[in-house]
Image (tube, rainbow, N blue to C red):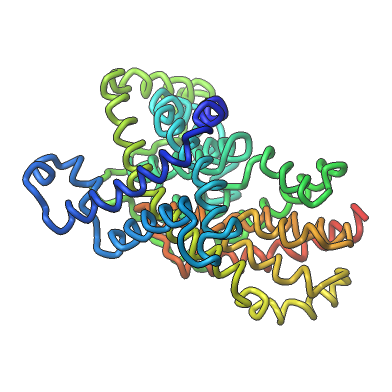
Length: 409
């Protein structure tokens, strides 16, 4: 559905997004500063457009950046295809359509028993290994097989409904939102590694699972409280009572959940609100913060400078062209495409393999996932995301290098 809508809307989608971002900036400014009665008397509409001063500034910047990039007015470093142009023309259309479709169809995943059924079935694996409820397996599968944005939307929804604690939701969105198999193939193709995609993706899988085992047990994730979202009672119950087999209890829980699902009208109302919240709230944030991140990555020496200490480490690991690989291993914090783009010119196939695999295990990309998480109610901030990105890199880099040296090459 997402691909069909995106292809159909392609001739006018970017223009539509520019209009939406401009409306978000203007309407939010008016609503937040003037607070007219026709807005404040409608609580749900008020939540969409009356925002904190910081997020108001971000929305205004998002609207301004979109207009400047579209009309190619302003400094080259801002409107270039490598910075603002990449966000507006490459990233936003994909995010806009995927989040729109998922916002509309999310109830099919969470409101009709699937979470309860798979959660009960998987809790004996997810709880001891990853300290997570069994239902988090749905989030992970949605990410691996579909899109990592799907996983994040599910997790945010489940956290706000009282099914995940603060720590559990933070663990899921930072440890299990792996980019999909389809996206991993795109990265492998950019790096000219498509001919060895199966060992490439298996290496990524090993790295992701290792990080998922370690990260929840150490700071900063281990220090996040296990309290539930304020205003939402704890609703999760996956333990199998006496007199039931696991399969029987999973089926019973799933049917009971589906019987309590909202009516079609209520579901449509929620879905429309969710879509508006994403388009008016999240897209401007990605346009503004994502553009700034891309400018820093593409037009400053920041990532080259901070990657200098990594060069001798890579040389010790016997990674060819270490000086070119080092920035590529850190620039992924800004955007998921950048490591592959920087490494595509590296001659050594082993080095391209290492950079590509590590970039897919890092999971935390500020221009997309980072912005979605910072804006969400899940209690995780920029510095925690940065720390987790570095920790995941430290964990997965040696694993990928060992597999590359001793198994693949």
